[in-house]
Image (tube, rainbow, N blue to C red):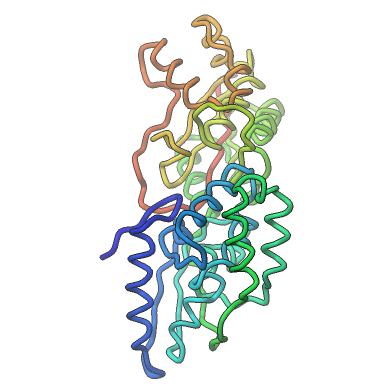
Length: 339
């Protein structure tokens, strides 16, 4: 058992991946390599073609840029020996079967864990497009950018036989389970989408708008994964920002609740999975001199909910689950109750 680093790769991830590569070097044609892939694989399984310092700088820059996960991984696949089918190439001539828990909206195989066993026709040009679109050169500095440029110019390695890649769970699995629990509680339930993407705050406003058209006793579930473009220097995560935006949009609306949470139990660097809000949340916050919109403008959603829970004297907003052990994106549930 090897431990790695997440969400940004570190020495332990590289050490673990080196051990995997050494093991695969001994495979033969009559061996069978079985891979279990889930959320976090991109950071945990890595053999970058640049120095660790440059690799970490690139990952932090992509995270801060608001780049969607599929484009994030498209850039990393071209800069890593095991991504973009690299693991399958290293396992050749042995056949490979991968059982995958998807943490990417829509389940595009090359994007899940950066596709270590998914052979693609991508080229360095795809990585260049992402890096230029999100201004990564300015974010990482000249020295790191030179390393990235040299690595991309080297291209990929040899090909391998196509592996079998099987998805065994995703955000729809979680949404169906949530819907069943809501039905057991007496709600009429609908899964509206499992492909929600875009800015977290806009997702919160969208979910709040849905609530305004719902009849009492209904539950609408949305699955997917949003992004946060940093504008301030606060502490938060995409689900906390979604919930905070929804709280502001639901201000004063009775008999309505909404929660947004990360299925891995960890929404950004906060220790929380997400948050619960109602139409009363913004009003209660103001009585304690907390301005929801000011905290939202500073990307400080975690601080808002932490201070609100402290002010009311009980943990009624932050959702603390601890690590769940897996990641299949995020869920937003909108609930209406009463008359």
